[in-house]
Image 1 (cartoon, rainbow, N blue to C red):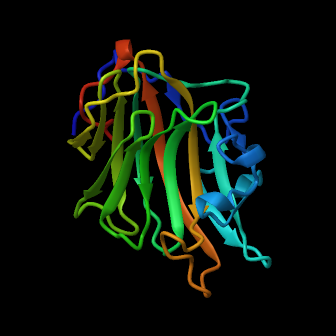
Image 2: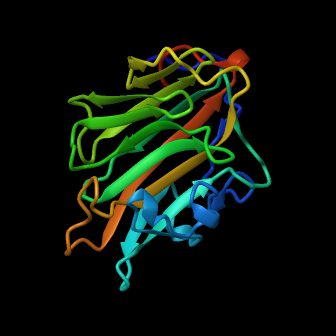
Length: 233
């Protein structure tokens, strides 16, 4: 495993406990900023409770009314106002959820769009990662033996002007050949949603809690992009 070069310093290193970097429990990607989004087949009720996000473990718990309190963090409207830009590279280490109904994602959003999904995952499709560039209408469903409920995986997404490129562990898995354009920029969102059952199964009646972990998340700019590889751990 290759270490980052000294020139490859990140411009953003996620500290999920930081109120400077992140806003918890609301996003303009949901109607009226949240807390619910039923039109997107979600049982979410976003909460700002730090127990749902701030340690890097994103949680959801069942409510008596049939919805789920869910954890979401966004850089939208945060004091730091961080946005990803064309040419940025995002790297993350993730532990996937194990129970059906969980819907984890790392994605971008601005002004009703500008969405690129670093990944989405549903345990009912146990070996499948969903990768999407909704800015230019491309996607890939990627099957891999490295992907399974509870797996720890490394993700890398290059937000190129002419091609968005996704990596899993140390291998490129999809270059969309479309990119995000030269002037693209968008806020970052990390979330755990809960499926309502239209497209993927809702949680079983005996499931009361769901979770997944983002152990590390960093963003690099074009003049500070690390070589392919990962920090030594």
